[in-house]
Amino acid sequence: MNRDEAFGLYKQMLLIRRFEERCAQLYVEGRIGGFLHLYIGQEAVGVGAMSVMRPDDYLIAYYRDHGYALARGTDPRLLLAELCGKFTGISRGKGGSMHFYDVARGNFGGDGIVGGHLPLAAGIGYGIRLRNTDQVCLCFFGDGAVNEGAFHEALNVSALWDLPVVYIIENNRYGMGTSIDRASSVKDLYQRASAYGIPRREINGMDLLAVRNAVTEAIERARTEKRPTLLEADTYRYRGHSMSDPGKYRTKEEVEEMMKSDPILLWGKRLLEQERFTQADLDAVDKEVLARMDETVAFVEASPDPPVESMYEDVYVRSPYINMKAAEKDPAWRAAIREDRVPPALPPPAPAAAPAAAPAAPNPAEATVQATAKVGS
Ligand SMILES: Cc1ncc(C[n+]2csc(CCOP(=O)(O)OP(=O)(O)O)c2C)c(N)n1
Ligand SMILES: [Mg+2]
Image (cartoon, rainbow, N blue to C red; front, top):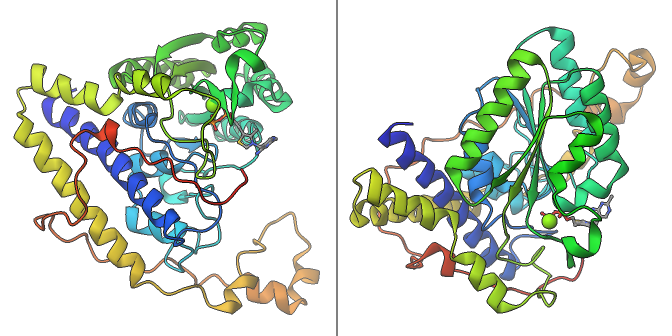
């Protein structure tokens, strides 16, 4: 990795952090509806893994999915618009936080059912095998998913059919308010792969370089040997499970202790000590990211709400498996299948010279808001 690339990854992690801090604010203001699960603290996993994928590879993830879309290069304006239910959103405002899809970038999105997308990842892997390409699929999920039957089904067929899928557990120690100690008989979650003869490894998920190295090795195995891997990235979420979680199942001291190994701080330290960047360089990029967020919010504020008719759109797809003759007699189907609804062309982001309006937290790890709003998932 060269110096510019190292700096670019810092900027990506910072963009995710600042994007989500802004999301928390907008949620409290009632401008984001539905659920909101923040990735803050876990950025090194998504950014590290994404940085070694090829543009034609695939990813599929769980509901804590903002970081993957941003690291994969989806425009933050489309993502924030999605969160605010705007028609300019990446899923036309119908998906919200848990459903950031971007087909052009091979992003099969977030999934709200714990473990539900693991068999889909196996299916993507099977599709790759059938087309006989050397693509791979990365599949991200939480520690809670390893106790779901779907995890075991997916791992079994992936090993049996030699599927090029890299399964990545983001072990943040809790599934909602239940600690891993109360949920799993085996604490080393990666060892579960041994039951299926799948290569496995545990990594420090706060260390971007460790993530990159392990994912590089796993991707190489998937591409060349067509074999799956299970990685367990040890990480931590600073915020509650979702915005409605007051976090009473853990102590403030525990959270503060974990923040000492904040992935952005650690990577920033590396840039200063090994790559000859200065603190002024890091501050400047933070300003640039904050200005980009102001611009993102302005775009969303100027965006229209979805028209009522759009409620009936995006319900069906044309498919060889559907009786098209019967379907096309149905006016609702015909309305739903309109194919002229492509996302609007976006103007390029303005140059990032404007000073940030939102106050910069001096230390990204300190900017925590334990907001309480709706009760639920
Ligand atoms: C099948 C299923 N069971 C329960 C839920 C409710 N639920 C939503 S998130 C969650 C916790 C999952 O924790 P984990 O997999 O560790 O991911 P994290 O939120 O910690 O990132 C639960 C139980 C669900 N969405 N789907
Ligand atoms: Mg968890």
